[in-house]
Amino acid sequence: MTQFHETVIKFENVCYETEQLSILNNVSGEFYKGKITTLVGPSGAGKTTLLKLCNGLYSPTSGEVYIQNKPINSYEPTTLRRNVGIVLQSAPILKGTVYENLALPYTLQNKKFPKTEAIKFLNNVGLDESFLHRHAEDLSGGQRQKVSIARTFINHPEVLLLDEITSALDPSSVNDIEQLILKINQKYQVTMIWITHNIEQAKRVGDYTWVMMNGQLLESGETNILWNNSNKYIQNFVSGVQEV
Amino acid sequence: MSYTTLSLTLIFVLIPLFLSKTLKLGLEKDTIIATVRSIIQLLIVGYVLKFVFETESIVYILLMITLMIVAATLNARKKGKAIKGITWKIALTLIVVEVVTQGILLGLHIVPATAQYIIPISGMLIGNSMVLSILFLNRFTAEVESSRDQIELILSLGGTPKQAIHKQLTNSIKASMIPTIESQKTIGLVQLPGMMSGQIIGGADPVQAVQFQILIIFGLLTTAALSSIMVGFLSYPTLFNERMQILKSV
Ligand SMILES: Nc1ncnc2c1ncn2[C@@H]1O[C@H](COP(=O)(O)OP(=O)(O)O)[C@@H](O)[C@H]1O
Ligand SMILES: [Mg+2]
Figure 1 (cartoon, chains in turn blue, purple):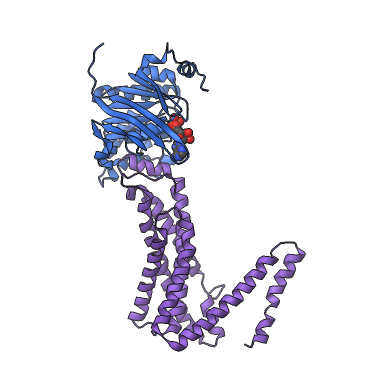
Figure 2: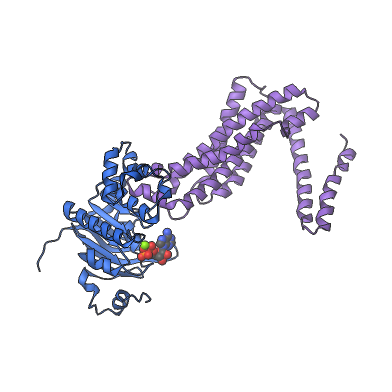
């Protein structure tokens, strides 16, 4: 199979450490344009940290992250983050209405977000118009997650970073969100990095996958590396045994 | 009041000592230390003030104000250790508070330009400014720590550090100013303010004492606003780096 893949994000010997511990250890690899790469691995593996390195919320302690072949630091941070959107794992919600939360990307640029647009984005994530003026803090975990997803879409990012975005959703919502993300991926050629602890989900949605453990990238490639893998750790992880 | 009469007031120290001992509160040592320290510190201040008032030298006045600012800075900075350059940020704030308030009071001839007025008023305002800085820093560091996610959210949507921390900054400024404003709503109803009581006991006309108290109250409001806002706006940028990332620990 010979295919030309344009690299959008490239990690080159990336390490990330705090004073006490090493969180990412010498990670190198590439994410391709218009593809969905899933990031799997036990909790504490460093997946969230890796994602936050992609939009400059963190910077590597050593090594380099390239976005479209240019070092990430050559981009102005606010522009970079609008182009590389992230849906955060905790789905943080600001005090106020759902509308105010959705309008945030606009208000940060002193622009007004049209209500009709807001309703469109709400509908896309499976919430109806009546949610617009609800207090965001009163929403259920799943509803918050949906608002959080919609809010990230509003900047029309070229790259989407998704951090366990379906963890609080019921099965039918999981399916809706997966379909929505796949649709956006195909329609707009959005490059995606999707963290999931659910191997079945990684199989359903991913073109490629990275398997992470203890701050290291154990293996990367097409999603089918997740089965029939010779690596014992990966076999164990895939079959649900998460200890190493 | 003679020193013999004054020494009778030690009864007020003996009462808590006795109670602490019988109820085993374990406060005897601290009570004695507090008593001795207050006697020594106040006596020194009394004699120093007497000297400064008699000489009326601008050098001594400035020296005393400098000492007040240094002491207040050293005290307040403990609460903001994690903030880079907090010492000079607080010192600068206290200097601005002092210059602005005395500038208004002396510039508009509201009070006479003598040590007798300048020093006590400076002491009250600088002291208040120190308390406000501490209240602000306590609140601000706690707010930032508990809302890291929300700060990262705004940064991740393309917000600037100033936008990301705006809520925590204004909340903390407001929260630190509330006690100053609230305490002034009930002032005089229950408790007569210390300065006013002192003047009345010292034989001043109560109405004149009230006038000075009003001056101080208004001064405290300016001080409160200036201190929190200045410390706040000087501090928040140090929580971020030049890549607009929030630093790990505050
Ligand atoms: N701000 C932080 N300070 C110190 N350690 C952290 C911080 N954030 C994450 N860690 C540690 O880094 C490791 C990786 O975390 P994370 O990237 O969140 O992993 P994952 O998303 O795979 O669960 C964990 O051991 C975690 O405890
Ligand atoms: Mg995570």
